[in-house]
Image 1: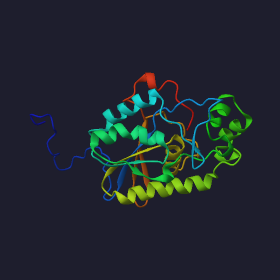
Image 2: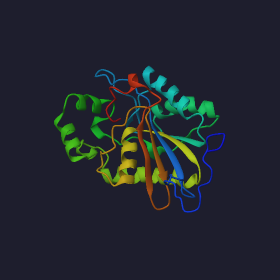
Image 3: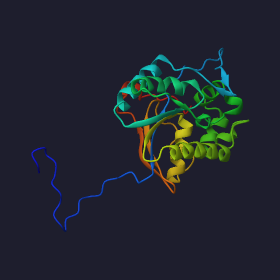
Image 4: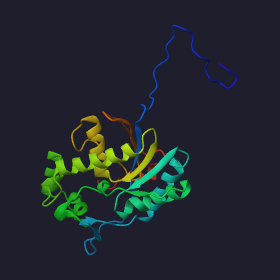
Length: 239
């Protein structure tokens, strides 16, 4: 050991355990699920953007966004990406201000389209145990919902968005503020897991994906150390 507590170079013939190193040319994506959004109400459907429900952040979500900024402000972040739904832009805002970065729009990061269950109906039907919701979970398919986005189409646009972002930032780290379904699809793609294996991360949780030309590597999932138990004991369903 040196005076600073750092080990000297090992002697010849000794081998330390390997540590992960970002492969040359790879991009590290810190996937942040948006903060908690406003509750759905029977008498007040969410406004729609291109057919997608577009609620603002709840006050709880705004606090979560500040905690995300506290957590990531000291990381070597080259860019911040958001979807075209305002809950992602509102979540990214405190971090963008701290870093002096203008968030970049990637429309294909938007949440899976829920067809007839957009505008807040999805939350109601899931909470009430609607038979179609139960079938959705059993079959791990969004498109059992009438009019919802087909699984192959959703997977293709998430794959395309992640690929474009990574290609624009070789050897850099970027923050991608997006949605629970998008994060779940990206990590299922990386791991070869079933479609819903990673769906349902906590609001404002951080997942970590390393993207190379030939593979995607999951380094972290649903990291909520910056939030505390008060924000993670009752996560909002999926979107």
